[in-house]
Image (tube, helix red, strand yellow):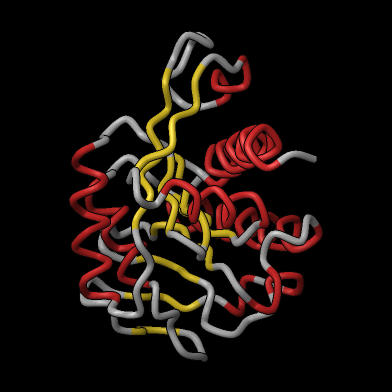
Length: 208
């Protein structure tokens, strides 16, 4: 398969995943953003701001260059584009990023923002994460205080990812959750596993 065909396949998978997330009610009111890395390492294809993810299709994506500028596609880049760029820079193995806003990740992000971290440990489902082969594993999910200053947030995200290089996701308080993977299928697996565990932890803390 050519590099161009592989990217087209990943873009199609990203759009299908975005629609699936919308069906789960994980991206309400046009929230969330999704991206894949282009064939050139510094290029990414990302959902534009204000797009209904339940109807996302390949033609909707914007192609972004290394400086964050749009080189193809129509629409406005998300304010969070720089956060995707940070994740791809720190995790060169990542080929896709998913960002959702769920009830449980929102509640837990607010509950643990003062601690700066949420720990998931002892769950069999942790084995769904890349590089994890046992339930005897602790996933360190950094929790960053949210801000509309995305330059500052990008800097703090960079620091958080360097602090926990084995982590598979990051929470923003009162905002949402970012996860990534080598391909869309890996990122989607991480998302589904971690959102399930967020719900388990949330029900423990807050009740049913």
